Amino acid sequence: MLDAIARHIPNVLGNAESALNDSFSSGLLEGAHYTRPPEFRSLRVPEVLLSGDHGAVAQWRRESALRRTWQRRPDLLLSASLSESERYFLAELAESWVRHKDLASG
Image: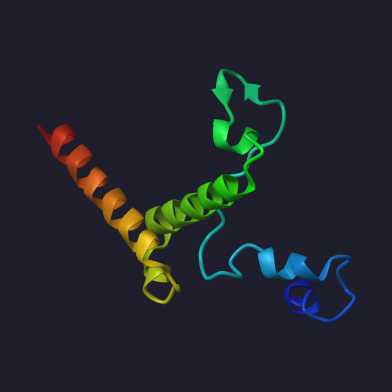
């Protein structure tokens, strides 16, 4: 708890923007994280993360956070500030889940 509070005191962090990007600071869970190498045990890092396109990477990270929040803590989405495109993304995610569930049940 002390660490969570101290991070918001000026000059405690080397980079003041770090606290803004902390897990859960957006009201959503963090999305998936990847590291090097780009392939490990036949699992590949998504190409968009290797592309160098900062806008596409930011969008992928936001969608990853939305997906993880929807899967694990959907209650948090009720108070999250979402754009129209993010609401559409979640609706598509839910629809895909229902289709998959219907196919699995026969």
